Length: 194
Image (cartoon, rainbow, N blue to C red; front, side, top):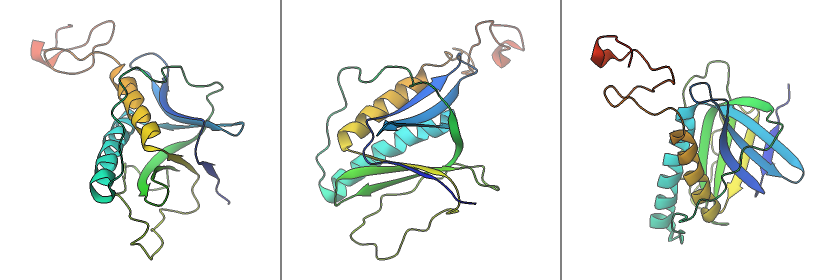
């Protein structure tokens, strides 16, 4: 069976977004470019980790390679909803990150869930000049979404991803668990509705 590689180098738009009400949201990464639209589903924790690791990757690229980094965007960037139709191409199992020194771009690769895969794996910074070996590919027969972003576009993605993750249900001030509109059973109140 052949696999598909959805490559956007660079995309016209690459964002994290959700479909559904808080508490029932489905998270997506969506890339648009060249008349194509690709949406892949993933978990909230994966979006949060992706934003965190991209920030670390940019800092490391600045430290190791002297890359000029833009400041965090002061104004709210792309706050539009996901483009429709939001058709899930696949569910993400593995996220890979790399910094391409030659083009000064960030490469994000979202790989479909394999048969025995259940955890998020994030790669480290790769120096393409020092590496003579091909990077080890997790299950090359899996579908993948590959996006190449400038540092500016990466910062915008990070800011939007953080807004999307934080836009869910507010936490209970006592126990920290998400509050549903109807309340929740708070362990700090011995199971009474809060």
